[in-house]
Length: 148
Image (tube, rainbow, N blue to C red):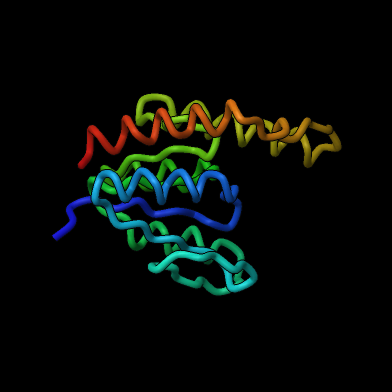
């Protein structure tokens, strides 16, 4: 029986990340579960389709996650919830979410949302680079080594 799994919030996960996940999971003998709304076509043997409702994918990821799992998501709120379940969380750019810093990230997210609602404009995320893939692979490998 496999103790830990990599669960991917695949709605916004770049294809290069999915390839890295598959490669490293094979090396570490770890199951990969991808979850996305039905609007996405993901090639994975363990792909689950969430409904198209708002937050359906996040809810399914949250419900499936368990201690020891590694969750790949760029959603800070989902990261906070799976950290509370003693799972690990990493973003597609390789940022490993930590229990001691997640509250600060959520406060930042809330402040920026409030600023945008009042008419302010914020920059979106920078364009993905090969360095993002490298950082993701390094940090995912480290999490898998610690977990599996």
